[in-house]
Amino acid sequence: MKLLFVLRQTFNNLWRERTPVTATILTIFIALSILIALFEVSWILYNQLHDLKKNMVVEIYLKTSISESGTARVRSMLEDQNTFDRIRYISKDAAADIFQEEFGEDINEILDENPLPPSFEIRLKPEFNHPDYMSILKKQLEEMPEVEEVHYRHSLIDKLENITEAVVVTGIFVLIILVFAMNLLIRNTIKLSVYARKRQIMVMKILGSGSLLIRMPFILEGAVEGLIGGILSASGLIIAHRFIASTFTMVNFPPRIYQILWINTISLGIVLGLLASAYSAGRFINKIHSKK
Amino acid sequence: MIQFSHVTVNYGYVPGALKDINLQLRDGDFTLILGPTGSGKSTLLRLIYMDILPSSGIVTVGKWTSYRITPRQINLLRRNIGVVFQDFKLIDNLSVFDNVALPLIIEGYRRKYIRRLVHTLLDEVSLLQSSEQRASTLSLGEKQRVAIARAMSKDPFIVIADEPTGNLDREASKNVLSLLERIHKNGTSVLMATHDYELIKDTPYKRIYMENGQLLPPDRTINIGKQKIRLLTQEE
Image (cartoon, rainbow over all chains, first blue to last red; front, top):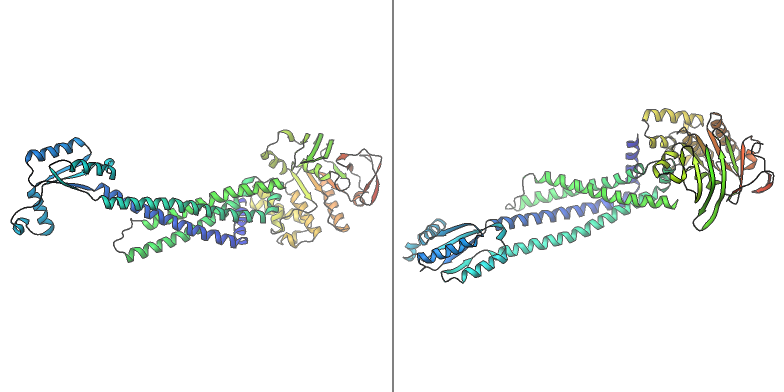
């Protein structure tokens, strides 16, 4: 009977305050959609960056006239660094084979000689995969007389890192504003409900009701607003994903993305709704008691 | 038993809403508190259901004592007291049935038990036919009868009635008094505050007189509204 009473009160409140309730649900819907979308973009960028860094190869081109002892000196210098996962030496002949594999032509036949320099291909350990270390290493290597040039895709990584950082910072900023707005609207709706039922709250107190029974309809009100906002947001995001997946074929979303979106968005909506309403209900109900 | 020992109540900067009250109310009594508006009758009653706590002194209600009562214990105390107000304090958007059932819902009783008990109580106050009506649609007299049924639903050891006839016409007032008398005859204590001396002048119940936050000694004449009243001794 208690549960039935609480549920009836909750839905009566929602219906009675339907205009602010609708505004709150719409805010939750917008806030959650932006929040989840920003999170997803950050996640994708972060993963791309991680993969790029993990697979990044530094190519050290040696002088074509290098002697065997010169090659050994560069190798020993690299091994002494102890910052690489893998060091691979590519001789002039091996470079010509790779050229043929990639372009289908024998370079010796085209130019009557092999101009490709020997090189080392190294893969850094993840903890050293940082642009600052890269530039130090590049400088250090290029100072060696045996080294012609050092190549790595630093500009792409730098760019991606800057974008990721900007998205994360913007995301946090937007998140703070949206959570604040959402909290403000939920608080306002609960405040209106509490004041509309001021008399009932006072009567229930006089009849000896515990504070949980008085607060519960208001707390559930916030949870229902969060649930509806979450459902709308999850539906919107799923539609957007379907559209992106069908329009841009190169975009691959992770498997089970729809279940993940559905569960996470709705749970987040409910939790945010619950927290904001629990806080507001306690605060405004206590105010009513003290004004008695 | 209810006991007041040297109880004083000050409201904020207004001192002396009640001044050094010493009073003892026995179980099973029907007690009337008489006095003009602002004499402290409602304050005295609010102390019993601990809506306010004394500024000094001690109020003891059964096993509960004001100086060491917790909010949780106040809730328990209130579940054992029935309170009837001048303005009824019904929840207008709930039905008559739900208003009477509210204390039982708060206590967590089962639906079947609540339905049976509420129907019995509404039958006793002759409002069974109106059980599904909204409280806001009732007449003032009917509202007060619903409030009495609600007070009785908890099977309280005492019913406190704070000016229960203050908004009612003569006929409805008599009905309310007779309902409270029936409750008393069934063994429940009743404590009723009123300034309607005409209504209670022929009743045989114990009387307490209040003026300016103090209990008055009997055997003197006071003004209550437009009436001059000779105070009776408590057992008269």
